[in-house]
Length: 189
Image 1 (cartoon, helix red, strand yellow):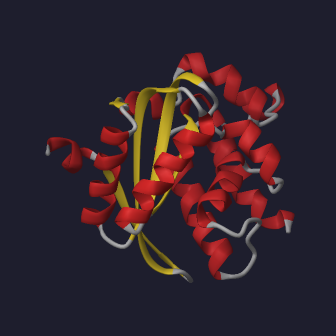
Image 2 (tube, rainbow, N blue to C red; image 1 turned 180 degrees about the vertical axis):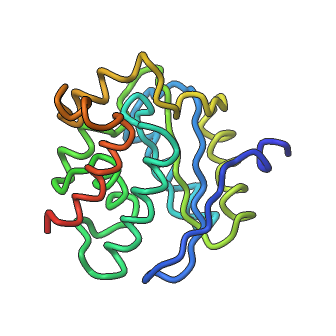
């Protein structure tokens, strides 16, 4: 049960009311992307949550995921959403991309052994932690939150994915530029 206590959870408030978001990283094999996503959805159906998974190589840290999660909740609450489901809306915000297909290409999971980032929306910390534990167990994911961090080996990939120029990096750190990209998506409507 130590896994359940270790999941980073955040209580978010806004025009959407109150929601709890959990974030965790891990390593696993994605044999078939569609089946993997169906298994994730099956856990959500049982637990009453909404979950999404990302290629952790495209994630600039926990703050990136939480900022995108809050933005997705606000967009849905204010009817400024890009997608009909919260999970897909979250993909758009993590990718800082209003086009759903392009968002999935930027940050979505693909087949093969992957570093994965998971986000779970729920109504309580207990619910979110239990969902995360079930996801890791049923999808056979080895827990490793280190995959979420902005490591040196991810830097150029993220810079390219989010089209961040060298000039921009001369003004602000990459992590802050990613958060800015996510925030600016609100103006894309």
